[in-house]
Length: 185
Image: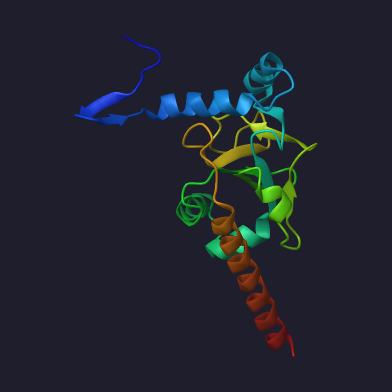
């Protein structure tokens, strides 16, 4: 038998959901933010990315790539993905090569409380090109891919964890700039 596999009971009272079932749940949940679910599904299938409205189910926080790369201490794609998965505690994050930015999906409340310079919380009235949940590495169809895929419906990043990580990256950048300035003097 092939196709969708639901949860599997590994021991009494413990259900384990397959990665594909969690991915399908996340996809269905994300589609709720589209103007037209059918169009968004077609866009994901044809182009790998669909426009979703922020501020309905989630806030997306845009982080310039240099901040996360500084926090990770590397530019190696796999190492950055491993670092962000741990540092964001599994909070969903995708990278957009066109804007050279990472986007972290957080609860709606983050939009009104986010105040870190050089970053932006995209709340109500913002539309964002979100990659299909199946695109988890650079892909020729689109410039965006999931670095830390959603673990299921409404599985969002804690804004306090994100705030800590962005602050860490900004400190790393400041220290590197100060060190470089000292060497140039």
